[in-house]
Amino acid sequence: MSRLEAFDIPAPHGMLEALLRTSDAADGGPPRMAALVCHPHPLGGGTMHNKVVFRIAEALGEVGMPSLRFNFRGVGRSTGAYGEGVGEAEDVRIALDALAARFPGVPLCLAGFSFGAWVGLPIGCADDRVRQIVGAGVPTGSLPVDALAGCAKPKLIVQGERDEYGPPAALRPWFDALPEPKRLVTVPGTDHFFTDHQSELRAAILAYFGA
Image 1: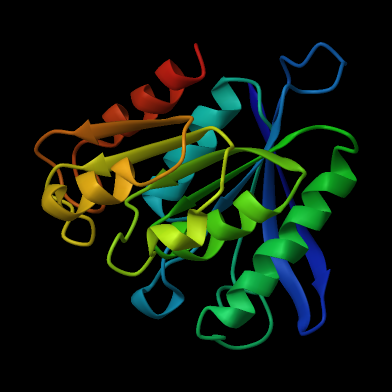
Image 2: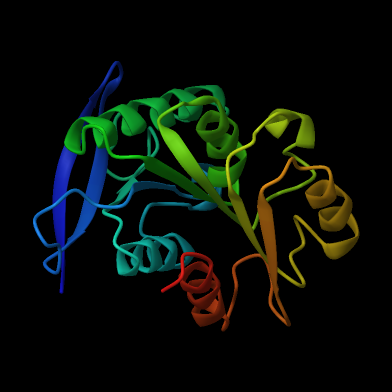
C-alpha cells in the first residue's frame, strides 16, 4: 500500500506545494531510485493532480520508486506567478534538490508530461544525480532535440499515436536524433492526454522497468 505525504518545499519565491508517494512495502533499505514528476502547462490548467501525472507517479511507485509531484509556481498553493518556462525550470531544480535531500545518495529519475517534459527533461539530462529520463506526451515542436544532445542517460519516451503536439511524422525524426540508450513506446489510438488509454501508459512504464 502506498502513502502520500503533503509538504511544502521552500523556494526563493516562497514555497512549492508537493506530494510524496512512498510504499509501505519497502524493506527498510534505500529505494532503487526516487522520481520527480513534472506536470503540464500551468496556463492550460496543468497541476500535479493531472491524471497523466498521477498515472506516471503511480507506475513509478509500483516499480519501487518514491515519487514526488509538485505544483509549479502560481499553481495550487505554490507561491509566485507563471515564469514563462524560466521560472518553472528553477522550480524543477528546487524540487530535485528537495528529493535528493529526502533520499541522499539514491539515484534520481526525472519524468515529465507535456510542458513538464519540455521544462524538465533538459534539466534531468544536465543533473548528475539524475540517472533516468521519462517523457510522456513530449511536445517535439517546442523541445528541440539539441536540448538533449549528449544526454547518454537512459530515456523512455511514451507518446500517443494521435498526439497533436508530437505527431508521428515529427516524433520519429526527433526520437531518432536522440542519443542512445533510448526506448520509444507509441500508444495506438490516443491523443496527447492518453484519453481512455492511461492504462497503456502505465503498462509501458512498468514493462520498461521490468515490473
